[in-house]
Amino acid sequence: MTKNTYKPGEKAPASGQYEIIGSRGGRTRQERTVTKNEPMPPTPKSGQKYIISDRTKNNAGKGK
Image (tube, rainbow, N blue to C red):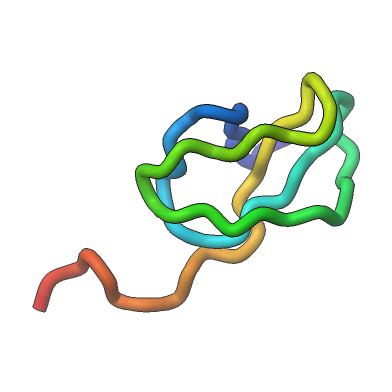
């Protein structure tokens, strides 16, 4: 898998929608909304991780 994965409890690198990925890499079609620098929420099952599926599209944090 070429995309970065994130474990529950890790800080989110960017705000957006994160999809839960199964323990063997399969898609679950479940998403969670996470804000930048907040910890990733717990997953329904052990061994699951997150990938970012839809980054928030705003200019927050970019300065003027």
